[in-house]
Length: 58
Image 1: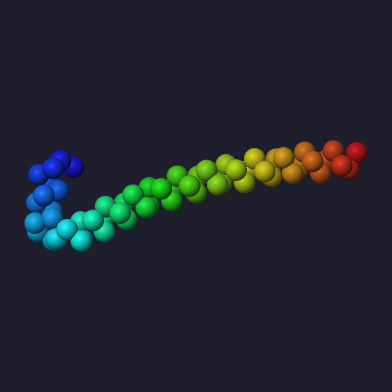
Image 2 (image 1 turned 180 degrees about the vertical axis):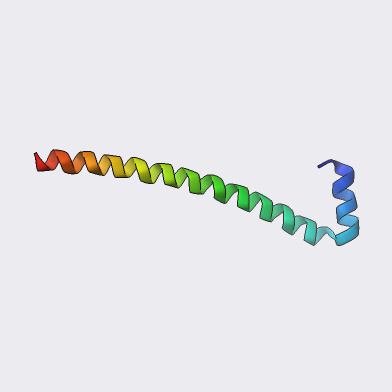
């Protein structure tokens, strides 16, 4: 999105609406990355737990 498109959007709907949409986009992008990272961590911790439990059983 270039500067002219942003200026036109601000002129037509107002700065608060454009700012809210931009913040929502950034929030959604951040949450998506965070969710993927947490899923990887969960899988890693599950593997570590399984290794720990099997060693304790021996």
